[in-house]
Length: 325
Image (cartoon, rainbow, N blue to C red; front, side, top):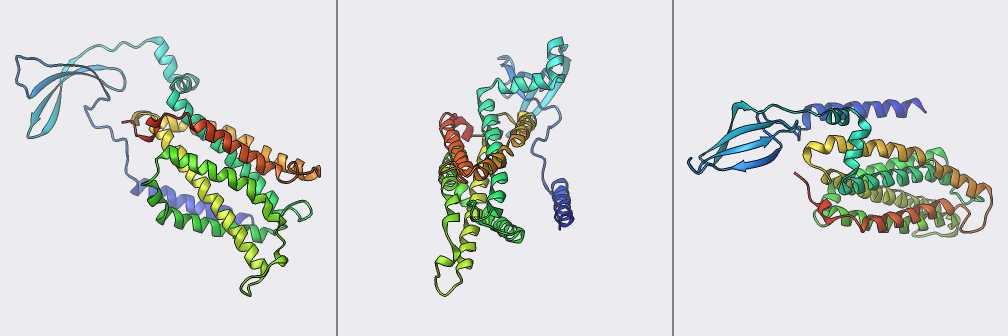
């Protein structure tokens, strides 16, 4: 029962690796004799209008004089052999080698810093819920849980995963054309704040207390829990996609590798703090406190964290909705 899920995960990971290697196109193709930034442009009046002299600066900081000729609407770049000597300072070498120096340089940009904080905060809240939710499922009715078995939990998570797959394929593309990334994040945080504060009240419902359309009460209760699990996955996916978009929009294309590496590192640190949610839930259940410090406590903390992130998102610059080229 424990080896099979790991083997299946390894199989799926291998399929994804092969798909990325053979089918995913490279988005940062560096063409020969192409340069990233234009530092100075000069036009020689004595020459034809369709030939310009450009002084370019490539990614490494080397200045190169290049000429461009316009032929039938196409621009042909012809770098001349003349090349100015490159001056490299010792501090630049240290910054390029030292990871902390590069991280500090990235975080000095307010756009990148805010995007990195959003991703780190998301990593913490998602890890927090991932620790609390299973404990709530398996807890007894007396302690405020749902008293589910491991088979019940596995079935609910599996069906929720299939529902999320179908939702991302058919519904989310329609939403992505209507909402900007920041607006998507904000609406999702509002929905999550309400969801986290309401979902623990499911344990108040006794399956034998209601019957509808001659269907067993337990079936309706499982469907209700299944719907709540799928809804949380969908909302969490909305937040993840929106934050990843603003992370990539906060930097230029040649900086995305470093930026994504930084936010993944920070996200891993905050995910390591996430298991505190399990400790908070265990404390609230074991101490037998009264409302709201009973089993609701962990969920209310999550709701407050979502509201705090929502308020922070109000300060995000709207330029994060657009890609930086």
